[in-house]
Length: 98
Length: 137
Image (cartoon, each protein chain N blue to C red):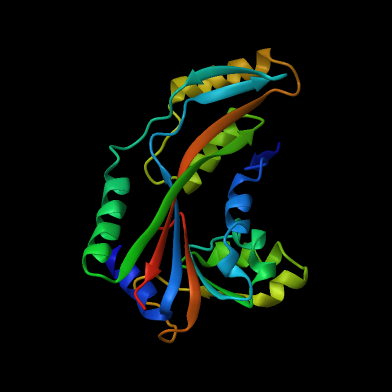
């Protein structure tokens, strides 16, 4: 059994079109298993990914062994109380999480 | 939701970009794709849209308070494909808050897949809205 999500690459193309992610420190809220993250992480300085679901964050790291993994930092937390410093990030992405 | 937006605002530097990607309900009807031919099977069972409305209200509040300025709104359809109705049902149950695959539609999808060619798949399309916002400098 197989399933595929966005094989047409429309979501990836959208993320690709955001020039400001280039070299940016990005905060992704609702990072989950990284479905969106890997489409753009390689262009950034870093991605801090927040999600309350610990299992999804484990999948995020297990699924990826390439160099992009080095720039992604998962944090298990609710988005209403972020354990992060103020004025740290150049951009934020709400990934199906608002 | 407003609290989350306030926290995001706190962690962003002045002038930083916030992108909200979010599916809007309802989904398009579940379809069978068989050798390029598309057949509608029926609609998913969905909530009353109150989740979308609550998210929109939260964004509206942070605009009004001047935390973020609206830059642009766009949209696209994001497709997902499944080989079986069971796969689709499991995914929906695990990942969707207000959407369900009705039993009757699951049965219809099962029969349609069985009767179709080996390459046939189920397709569900979500309408994704992309909102770009800017933290006040």
